[in-house]
Length: 47
Image (cartoon, rainbow, N blue to C red; front, side, top):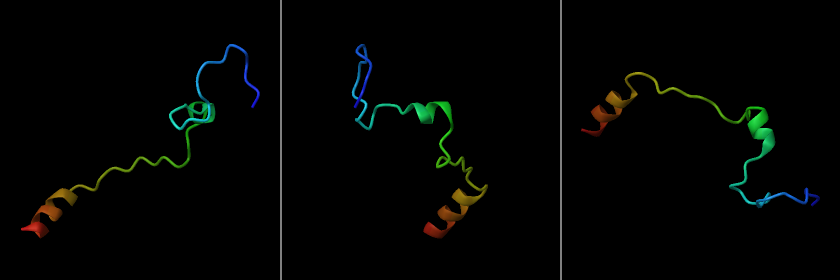
């Protein structure tokens, strides 16, 4: 792997941020809002 001489960090670790994910939003992330009333129905089924 070619890296600049002044590079600091571990690029193969999972906690290293990928530049592609910072520059362009990852298509796998979906913002899902819970449906209103879902919590109420689950509580009613439990009792």
